Each structure stands twice: as C-alpha cells, then as structure tokens.
Length: 344
Image 1 (cartoon, one colour):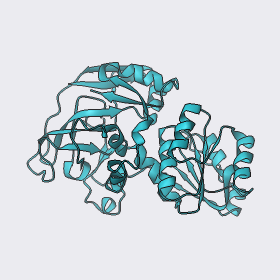
Image 2: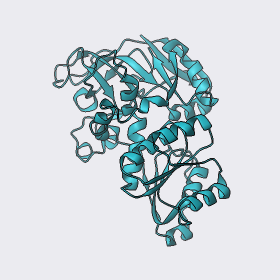
Image 3: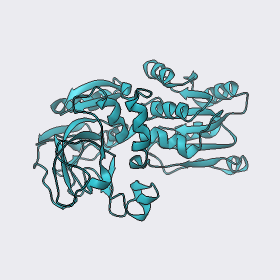
Image 4: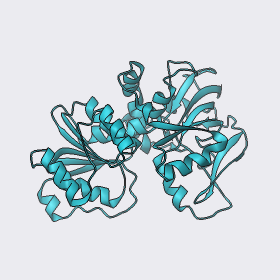
C-alpha cells in the first residue's frame, strides 16, 4: 500500500510499504477512506533531523473494516469506523476513568510497528477498544464532519470541558487554527454567553463567528489583553482555552483570564516554560488541560454531528490526494490552508 513518510524537515514522501495484516487476535485492518493533516504534524515537518528511518505520519482517519482478528467482537467487515488519535484497549483502569490517552496497553499511530493514519490502510490494535462505529455509509456527506471526532473536535471539547465552561461564562479562545475553532464550537455547546476568539486570519475568524464566537480580537500582547478585558467589563474571561502551544499564547492566556478563572491548555506545548509566577498564584488562577482522550468524547459528540447541529468539517478548506500530500503539508505550513483533507 501507499503511505506517508517524513524523512526530514520539509521532506514528505508517499511510498510503498507493507500491507497491514492481522498480527494479534484483537487487531482489525481498516481501509482508510479519509484522513487529514494535523497542526501537530507541522512541528516535526518543520524540525525533524534527517534520518534513514523515516517517520510514519498521520493519526486522524476513518474508513471501512476489511478484516478482523479472531477475538474482535464489536466489528465486522464493511463497518464504517472512526479511530481516535491514539489506540487503547478501553478496559484498563485509566480507560475506565475516561483517560484513554494513558491506557496501560495503548499507544500512538505510526510508531512501534503500527501504521500511520496518512495511508491507504492501517492495522488497528485493540480494535474493540479503539474504533467507534459510524451509522453512515462510506459515501456519506457527513464523513468530513465525523473525521473531526478523531482529534480536533474532541480536543477543542476537552479544552472547554476541563476548563469547566458552563452557562453564562465568558470564554476567550487563544488561536484560530482548527482546534481553536473547535474550542469555540464546544464553548457554545456548553452554554458560554460570550466567546472571544483571539486570532488575526480573517477567513478563520469569520468561520469562528459562524461557530459561535461573539467577538474577535486580532491584536496580540498588551493591546490584545486590554481589548479582551474591555469586552469583559474590565475583569477578563472566566475561562481561557489555549489552543496554540507556544509560550506567548500561554502568556496571553494569563493576561486575559479573570481572577479566580481557569486556563485550559490543549495546544501541544513547544516549551517547558510555564509563566505561572507569584502574581498569578495570588490571583487564584487554575491551569489545567492536557492531551484530549478523544475516545471518551466521540459517542457524546457524534449525535450533534448526525443531527446537523455541529458542522466541524467546515474547517477543511483544501483536499488533496494521498500522492499529493506534500502539497498539503506545504499549504498548511505556509498558512495557505487551515486544515487539509486527504483522500487515499
């Protein structure tokens, strides 16, 4: 089959690799119908040192079950399924607590002999625990929306949930990427009264308004902080959802949160420095967030997509064939595309 390999920064190739096969009785093989490029894929795309051991890419996909191992009970060939961005048995102590990202037997796509999501097919370990069946056909127009359950919608929702967003809250969302827009959508779903999206890419912030943002602040630094405080009666936002991962975004978050408020950071951290000093400690700021256990949220969020209430697939503004995926990486890296859909 064909699959995406990253050899070094700016060096993405699609090459022939071994077809996936059942290796364990709990495996399934899924033919991938849709996948996509994630903002977190851009970090290694910009920085990976050259290697003769390329990295298998992709962690978001949905497709059709082709084959199942002898112990798989929940799926059969022909089922349309979505895979969360990590695989898990969904039975260990952490999984039972809704923390599948810490599964004692789980792992990530594209490492340790497991296929990546940007290819024509993938072996899925612990298929019963990992996959979620979709009540649609493989030609459904909802597939792009349902693909967001693999990562971005659940990550944005995780930001809002861990922040404790509730009815009447003011919420500031830092970042107008796909996860930031999903966070806007999620804050609205949970009842936020005012949602301020901090971003400066007009096409993206316009979509954010459609998703529920009541205000957009393009300014950054002290000017941006002052603008958010002005919009929130001088106090700052009750909840701040940090969806970028850079230190500057976290500094901005502390600037716009009100005393006693909560910051949830779900952007993959690109710095170990956390600017949480005595001043913020004295303001009783709560810092939370972390990697989203997407598997815990998929069945909760799916009905909103099936009903048409949420259309998160609108974040996909470019589609490429698998063999042209390098163009998709370049477009996202150059900010020419918000999120790229890949059709194998």
